[in-house]
Length: 306
Image 1: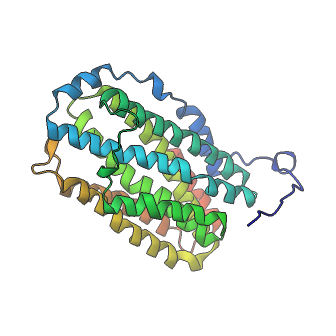
Image 2 (image 1 turned 135 degrees about the vertical axis):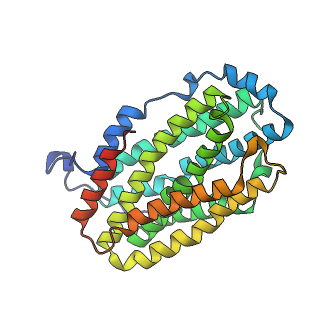
Image 3 (image 1 turned 60 degrees about the horizontal axis):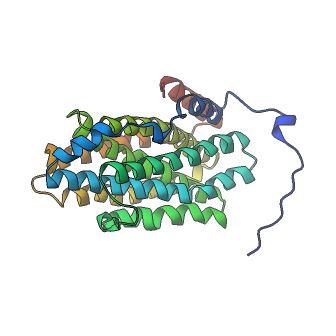
């Protein structure tokens, strides 16, 4: 199918001007301030020493978690472009401008985990780690994520945009990635292991917190503009939560006892808390105007220092 040719009739910068007080532009400012870091600058010297002291199961769980993150960050890097194109085609310049930082940051996250795999964990490029990707992980990253994002290539409806942002921002980032950061910090930071990894994960977490803030705004905006889509949004969130929680169960199922003293129930509770917190934020805009959404989002962005 040949894409229709779209010509420009006007430009925002030479008509109304950019709305610098909009939530996407506020997040764009934060990205310019906090998102400038280079994975190549992170020092992994101590991380390599710590790696050599780990037991076989400790090494296995760090490698397993890292393989999930490496593929996950690559997946969102590959699949993100249709969302950018969808908002660009709607003339939402401020949203598109902020989304340009997503691609840059997800690519850097992919770079970070590849360095960690190669230089610390001793995984040579070309070594196949996909055996660490169990059924629920494949459901989300091999199927649901690319399906939802690439749907926007042929269907840019509000419903399709909701599905894309819920899958990407709400579930992949807001539940799985955040629970994964919690695992790294519990295993490594809290035990004073691998300071390079800890530094990189902290940077990633800051980037993703901005992504999630945008996702909540984006979903809230669409729900405010199209109230009839709330049932679809709620159903999509709940359906995708199941495989997300399933990924956590899959990781823990490989160990008895679980290395580093990790407790399954703690991580399930953490994941559910992250999900319910974001769900409550989105549900709070039901029946509210777009102006209300903007005000609520501004307050949340201003309260976050990253």
